[in-house]
Every structure is written in structure tokens, then in C-alpha cells.
Amino acid sequence: MAIVERLEASPGQRGRLALANPATLAPLGEVELATSHDVSAAVERARKAQPEWGALSVSERGHYLERALRTLVQRADDFVSTLVSETGKPATEAIATEILTSCDALQFYAKRAKHALADRKLPLHLMKTKRLYLVYRPLGVVGIITPWNFPFLLALNPSAQALMAGNTVVLKPSEATPLSGQLVEELFQSAGLPEGVFNLVQGDGEVGAALTKAAVDKIAFTGSVETGRCVAEQCARRLLPCSLELGGKDPMIVCADADLERAARGAVYGAFANAGQVCTSTERVYVVDEVAEPFLEKVLRETTALRQGAEGEFEVGSLIRAEQLAVIEDHVQDAVARGARVMAGGRRNPDCEGIFYEPTVLVDVNHEMKVMREETFGPLLPVMVVRDEDEALRLANDSRYGLNASVWTRSRHRGLELARSIDSGCAVVNDCMITYGVTESPFGGVKESGLGRVNGEAGLQGFSQLQSILVDRFGGRSEFLWYPYTARKLRFLKRALRTVWGGALGRLLS
Ligand code: NAD
Image 1: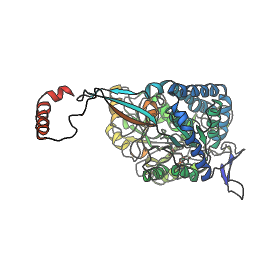
Image 2: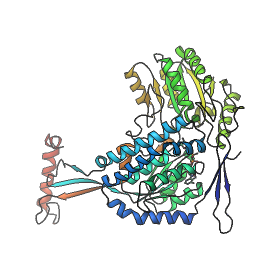
Image 3: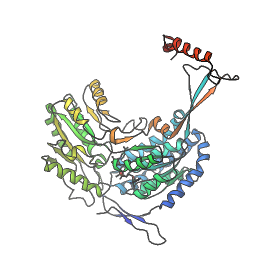
């Protein structure tokens, strides 16, 4: 079953993508694919527009984002409707996780970039005759490559940050969700961005690869570890900076003193929101033996109460891509073959027409199974009972991923302590995903979950070139350290070394 079908180019015509709604299978039209020539042309347009855009003040650039924000609020219903038909997610999820979050991001960057990107004056602890300035300059043209799970937010958010930092942008959204990419373009057009400042190229991996080879100054990539590695290799050849926001296998640790009602509801939301297609999904649970039974009972009660569908009120929508079904089915089959038991779900939903997989709870799982080691990116919740918190922590860290993690305990101190011990870029105590604070907080992974950070002030600075400028304060004919090198100068330097760093003076100065 193809939700997006690639129609090959014919003489004089570009290739196209034929799209269908993954929840209803209704056709959604076609989108033209860019060629590698289109990618170069988009980068050239961006290059031409950059000097003028970069010369605007940060506040002036912020006005464009504020205009985009106003349009987004006015047209929220239209945007939600496109997102729902392209992804099969519930409208509540589309508005909460794509539109509200995008509004927050636009407002935050419009307002805060001025502070984040302001020149800094740094005092020099030794050379008082100099003054040091740190200056954030635009990188130039940023290529942004994005996935399909939050196709609007994940395309808009890095674009807004790159633009605020004075760059021009070429965005390549996922081939699975090109209409959401078009919404981002429409939004920036409605904000009146000057020609060439924001550019959209549609296409699959070939077009993405062409963008990584084009004359851009940074690639901001969000997607899978496998593609991220290709992008990083391509960038490394040209010493091109790149940020990689990749997959996760986020652990959840349920301690003996956890509020089990909240933890169970959090596990169910964390695993099944967006049909589990969230990079920070709860992908594996470790619950201590002492409370495993009541926790599981609550998890099952919450899971079986979930409604799945495409119309009216429901909590869990369809999958976005047909290909994801194969991964989910493989993980369940592998787990069952190795001794896991399915406590809920465990199959495609026979009552729904589109690509739906039932919210699934697995027990008796272990780290031999794919479901505990590889990213599923679907509605699976494997629950493993562990002896104690130490075992939970050891297993949580037994992963090649390190994006997000959650810890559930009534002790804030213990929660923070455990969170700090998990090898992940982000962690949450008594909540399931790092939803709140994701605008302000630098976001990204460790281990194979990625490189670099987006979001927050650090994200804006990541789309900039940090330039250090040292200014001499007093002038004079020459500097002591300049030529000539005399025996007297050498003696003086040796004496200075002993005087300053041989005693307490050096510590005092620094
Ligand atoms: P993907 O890696 O298949 O594709 C991501 C993007 O890369 C798409 O636009 C695709 O067309 C493009 N692409 C494919 N091959 C390319 C190549 N050789 N060069 C350049 N671009 C290429 O990922 P996906 O299936 O779209 O997204 C799901 C993955 O994204 C999951 O692993 C998920 O965890 C991850 N993700 C991470 C975050 C995060 O912030 N860490 C957020 C959302 C999704």
C-alpha cells in the first residue's frame, strides 16, 4: 500500500509524488519533484538574497516572524485540516503539537533573538589593554532537511531560527508530507519575506542529497540515524557544519514511590501520542518489581480505553507512512518469538480502512528483542519489570540512542539524581516528553541520537558564526611582545611567569 507514490519524470516533465490520506486512503493530489538543477537554483536565489536579509536588524527580521504568527493564528483551521489529511493525526494533536508549538516558537524567536544574538563584551582577565567582543554573524545559506512526523513544526521551527540569525533558507521537507512543507512556504510568503529569503524544494532522498552537496553554509537535518550518518559524511567532506536531530529509544523509569496513576497515564500518552511517531516517544518502560502489577493494570486500563479512528472523537490516529507498518510488525513478531506476551493490541486495526496499528502493550520483554533496542516509531509500549532502580538505570543506558528519558518518583531529589545519570540529551521528571520548555530549552541528543542543539538561545546561536574581535584600547608605536626578541625581553618574560603564576597573583587575576 503506497500512501506516497513516486511518478517518474517523462520527457519535458518533472517527476511527481501522488499523495493519499493515510487514514482514509483518499487521494490528496500531486506534488512536483525538484531536480538537482532546481536545488542549485534555489540555493543561488538564497545566496543572492542573503546580504540584504542579513543586513536587517534582528528586530526587523522579527517583524516578519510576527506577521507569520498572525497569519498562522488566523488560518489555523485550514492548516490543521491539511495536517490532519496528510498525516492522519487527530485534530487536537495537530493543533497542540504543530500549531500551538509553532506559534510559541515564532513569538519566542521574534522576541528573544535580539538578546541571544547581541554582541557580547568580554573582560580579559590578563590583558587589560585589550577589549574582546563576541559577535554573532549569519552563516549565509542554510539547507534544512526535515522528517514527516511533525511535518509543519519541524520544518517551520529550524527555518524560523535560521532566518532570525540572518541566514536565508532552502527547505526540503519529507517526501511523505510535502503539503505541510508547502504550508510553511505559504506562511512565510504571507509574511512578505523578500524574494529568495525562504525557498522550498520538494522531493525525496535524492533531492535531500543534492541539497547537502549544494553551495550551502550549513545543513540542519532532522530524521533517522541512518540518513543522518549519510548527511554527516557528506558535510564532513566539505567541512560543512551540520546539526543532526536523530532518532531515539527513550526509556521510562518507574520507581517504587511513583504516583502510579500519573505514571501509567504518562506512559500511555508518551507511547501512543502521534501514534507513537515521536522522536521523544516513550519507547521502553522499566518498572520496579514492587509496583509492577498495579502499574501494568492501570496501563492496560488506559490503553484499552483509547479510541482509534479518522473521524469524530478519537485519541490515536493512523500511521503516516505505510512503510512504518513493516517495522512495527517486525518488532512485535520478533518480541513474541522471543517470549514476549501481547497484553493489548498487537495487530493492524481491522475496523479502520487506512494504515492503523492498534495501541499495543507488551510484557516479558528483554534486551535481546528489537523492541527494546531499535527505534520502533509506532504505537508500541513494551514494559519490563526490573529488580530495582539501579537495574532500571543500567538498562536505560544500555542503548545506542540518547535523546530523551523520563523518571517517575515522588522524590524530586531522586528524580533529578536519576535523570542526571541517564545518558540522554534531555530528560523529564514526572512527565513523559519534553513538550514544555522545548522552545526555550536547547534540544538534541547524545550517542547516536544526534549532534548539536536546536531551539532556545543556543539554537539561534547555532545558526550563526561566532566571531571574536579583539580591539586594542590604547595604541602606541608597538607591543611589548612584537619584534625584536632580545635577551632582556626573555628575562622579563621569565620573571613575569614566576611572579604571576608562581604565587597567588595569577589566581587572583583570573
Ligand atoms: P529519514 O531519515 O528517512 O528522512 C528525513 C529526511 O531526510 C527526509 O526529508 C528525506 O527525504 C531526507 N533524506 C533521505 N535520504 C537523504 C540523503 N541521502 N541525504 C539527504 N537527505 C535525505 O527520516 P524520516 O523517516 O523522515 O523521520 C523519522 C526519523 O526522524 C525517526 O528516526 C525519528 O526519531 C527522527 N526524528 C528526530 C527528531 C529529533 O528532533 N531528534 C524529530 C523528529 C523525527
